[in-house]
Image (cartoon, rainbow over all chains, first blue to last red):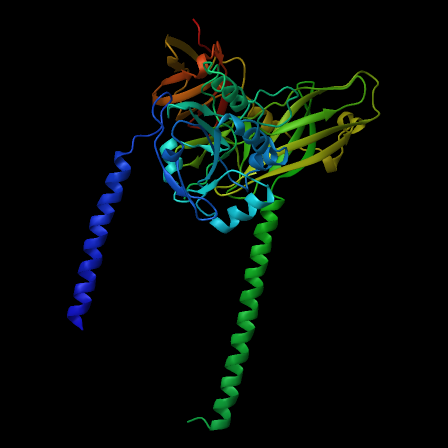
Length: 202
Length: 286
C-alpha cells in the first residue's frame, strides 16, 4: 500500500515538474503584442465551447475587444449597440470581430447569458486565466486591438474619445481605423490610451 | 454520576444552546453581509456644505467612500472615470469648475495605477452671488464611478441648496471646509520650492527631468500627471533627498500627439504632518 502511495506521489511530482516547466517556458517564449509587429497567436474557447484560434483568420482584419459584462463602460457601449453595430458594419469587408473576457471570476455560463442578452453575433472567448490579456497588454474594458491582413498589430487603444458617453461628436477610433484599413489607407490614429474599468485579472 | 434523565436534559440544553448560537451566528453573518452590501451601494454619500473663507463662498460635495472602494480624480489614471458635476443655478449666480483636492494613488491591477479618493473627500467649487440675490436654488447633478478591486459601480445624485443658505449658512447643511480647501493645489509655490525642468524630445518620446528644491526638506513627494488620451507615462522615478526632489520620466506621444503642456500636481508631506500640494505645469516643448 505504502509503495503504491509512493509511486503515485512520484508520478504526480514528475508530471507537475515536467508540465509546469513546459507551460512556464512556453509562456515565456511567446513575444508580447507590440504596435506594428506580428500579433501573437492564441487559441481560446468561445462560450459555446468551440475553439477560436487567431491563426485561422490569417489574411483577414481582426478586431479584438476586451470586455467585461459587469463594467459600466462596457454596459454603456452595449446599450448603445456601439460594438454590435461596428462589428456588423465591417462584416462584409471581411473584418472578424472577437470579444475577449479576461475577467478571472467569469465563467462560460455567465458570458454566454450576457452574449445572448446582448444579441452578440461574434465569438466571445473566455481567457479567465488572463494569459492572452497579458500577452496583448489589455488594460481596460473596453480595450481595442486591430490586427491587419498581414497579421500585424495596427491599432491599440480606446474605442473612442468619449469616456463619459456625453460627447455630441465623438470620434470612434476603431471605426476610423477600420475605415482606413479597408480602403488601403494608413491608420491616422494608431495608438490611444484606452479608458474603462481595469481588466480584472486574478 | 449523572442519571439518564439528567443527561438527556443536559443534551437538550446543549442542543438548544447550539441552535441559539447558530441563529445568532446566522443573524450576525446576514447582518454583516447586508451591511457590507449597503455600505458598498450607498458608500458614496454626498452632502452639501458651505463656508466663507477669504471673502470667497465655497460649495463642497462631500463623498464618504466605503472601505476598499474609491472614486476618481479629474484624471483617473490608467482606468476609471473622473467624478463629474453639472450645476444648475439661478440667473446671475455662478459656480466655478470643480476644485480638486490632491488625490492619492491606488493600484487597479498588477500594473495599473489609479488616482482618486478613498474614505472621504470634498470636491469644491467657488460660488458668486450678485448683491441682493437670495432666491432660488443651486443644484448639482453629480456622477461618479466607484470601484473596488473586482467591481465598478456608477453612482449619481442630485444635490440642492437654497442660495439663501449660502448667504446665511444653516447648521444642517454647513460645515467647516477649511481642511479641504487647504488640500487644493496652490498655483504659487515660489516660497516653498523652486523648480528646474528639462524636457528633451526624440521622435515620439520625451524625457523629462525635474529638480525641485525645497525650502524645508519634505518627507515624501508624490506626483500626479494629467496625461489625457495621447500621452503614456513610462519609467517614472521620484528620488527624494534632503531638500531636493528629482522627478524623472519618459512620455510616449501616442499617434504623434503634439501635446505642449503636461499639467500635474506635486504633493509634499512634511515632518510636522503638513501636506501641501501645488500645480506643476510642465512645458513639453521648450
